[in-house]
Length: 258
Picture 1 (cartoon, rainbow, N blue to C red):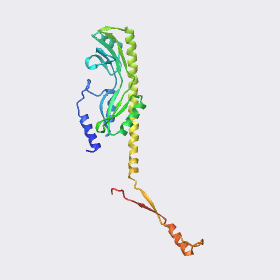
Picture 2 (picture 1 turned 180 degrees about the vertical axis):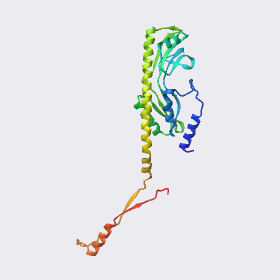
Picture 3 (picture 1 turned 135 degrees about the vertical axis):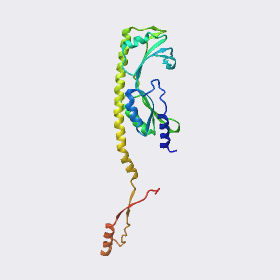
Picture 4 (picture 1 turned 30 degrees about the vertical axis):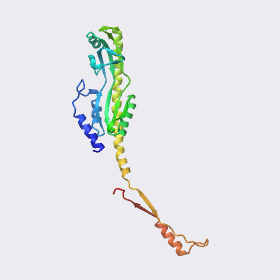
């Protein structure tokens, strides 16, 4: 199967799968971005999150929280209020942690140069932790990520370890990060639209350039009269002038695979 046909098969299979995320649907703030990508034949999205503030209750394993073993006390993709967090903390029984997780997006790309277009738009928009991975069978994946996350422990074994004032301070920081996150998503969408428009405008010119037939110039070989340093006869000079008039003849050759 051709590369383009195989990619289209992957895309159809992926987009027809059920959404197995906790929310079960694409987040509102990235719907247009996801639609923009999936509407282009050279891309399809495999997962996304617009960014969220959450409060998890569980055990801390080193520096990483194993979310599958935690209780989700609070999760929102919008700005959060201090009272929401304090109310959720009352139900904590383990080590509760307040987190802000920024926007993340995974996009399968038809080829490396397509991924590079997305990567450039992502970096220009502030998602400087984005990266491209080329896997088996030439599968090219772009992960759009950011580093402006937040993770702060608030309780231990169900006991609140910080003041309400500090919780209020952390919620304000998380909200600021959420607002910046949304601005970056909007910039990414605008940068991507512009990049794709430029790519589409350049495509016909590239195709036309590829289709141009090579042109060669045939020049007649002039016969010069070999005399003992004297100019040729008038008849000879007339013949040479006639040859000069027809010297440049453009010949178009068929492509090799004609």
